[in-house]
Length: 387
Image (cartoon, rainbow, N blue to C red):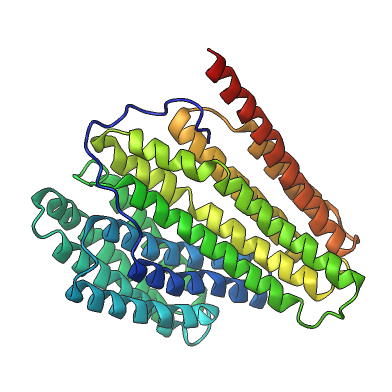
């Protein structure tokens, strides 16, 4: 995305500036733990099926968290009743997070029941929180049946045979998405700064958790030159991911939402944040898996699953921004699409190369792509200022 030109018509409404509350940050920690638990799910099954199942579970957890991000953007979270209900949702989310590694094992019911409770509490709390706002209450009333039906299907999947569970959970997710698309034009009211901040914070917390995973991966390394190089390279990857998101993308995403008309904000927020931030988080999770595998044996060749996790992670991360830019500006982010493709090809092709070299080369592709894009945007800004 770019923030160098007007994105959409400036809203004439007076914006109420809000900041993310401490209880929202506390809530996010629980769900980011669930995100990072997906790494354990991937490491248990590194087959193609394992990667797809892990992406599905992450999508379900992401959808549950996004539903709460929308809810807390619309309601008062500082009253005691809301806090107590959110604590209940957090408890369910914590059980869900603990159960993620067993989502396709015999104890999958723990995940499904916790997921069901978190989703149903969301619909109840949302409706209660907007009870004095007829427009939003109607919107929630239209969407809640879809969300509750999806939660019920997900619950059934937790008790189904493992061979069919992924298909049932995929059906649950499809119901969520279809319901959201069908009520897109409802009276959703979005506070731009608060909404964008919630998603930016969840990204930075996920990056922080990836640093924790990297730190754990280095715990058995001998403290020598290889150790130092491995830590520097892996950390450079996290820093590059941060740069790619927070240098201008996060600001541009918020600005696009702020400048949208009130009617357009709901669909825009849904697409740019709820839909297109999912591959951002998926990319971070995949990168954490690859970095952890690299740091366990930095001088050995990275396994094929590790190389796919690395390439797909960086590619998904970069392509997410291309989707955002096209949604807002109808322009194609060739730099990021090209870098994502190169990163994937390089990661998969470097069979037999030391893990740390493979990781370093892919990170170099990421850094160069962001540097080139940043330089180009600075040139455009300078040209606009001279006009």
